[in-house]
Length: 78
Image (cartoon, rainbow, N blue to C red; front, side, top):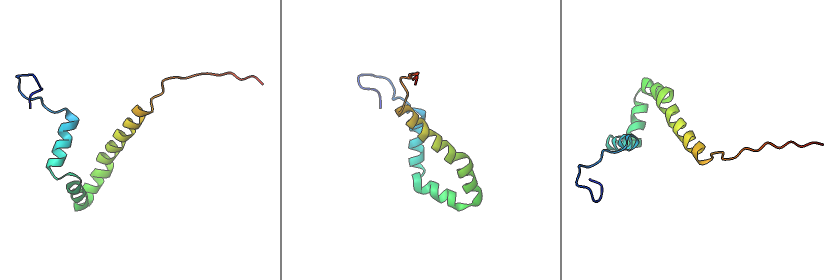
């Protein structure tokens, strides 16, 4: 769908959104679980390559939310 007020063609979804749409289109979580359970090779691929990338994305979001905006050094003399 074109942006409101524009006469141009619809915008392509952002890469992350496109991947999410494709994931839903091919069956989502249940299809992924079936694929992983289908063979030991699929299970190895999932845990060796896909799962670590998903975890990394979660940690990046947490890091963004808890950004450090100030650092102070305090010298305390007894």
